[in-house]
Length: 138
Ligand SMILES: [Zn+2]
Figure 1 (cartoon, rainbow, N blue to C red):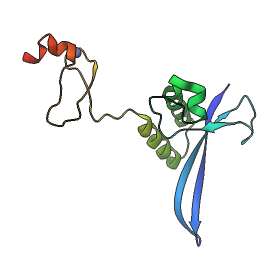
Figure 2 (figure 1 turned 135 degrees about the vertical axis):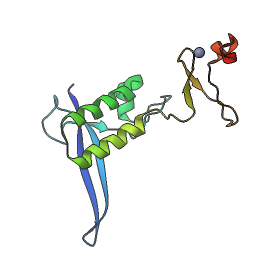
Figure 3 (figure 1 turned 90 degrees about the horizontal axis):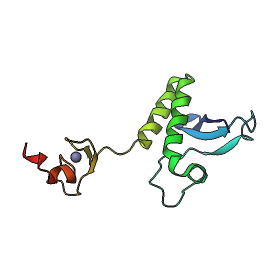
């Protein structure tokens, strides 16, 4: 398998005026064929969740590695020096795939990620273990 992204622009026009431009991200296997759509593997998912049940072919194929694989494909597509518009679309995808930073902090002592409680009143600075050991007193 030699996977890469095939990004196409889909322009919607209404009476000759562009109403929307969308980029479609397809994952292709250039080992399979040099030509699209013969080499089509799957669409690149917009976001990849912690997988309970694979949501699409891509996640079915790569399972736990879906997120990593998607990021790799996007990074690789960036190195091919696409035009500015596509670069923007790729960056948006990378952002969508990156874990949500809100509510996520790392322990100030050991650096372990802490999942914050839903309440906004309190932001934990230390993970449970460090907290227990009394680092919070410093
Ligand atoms: Zn800690």
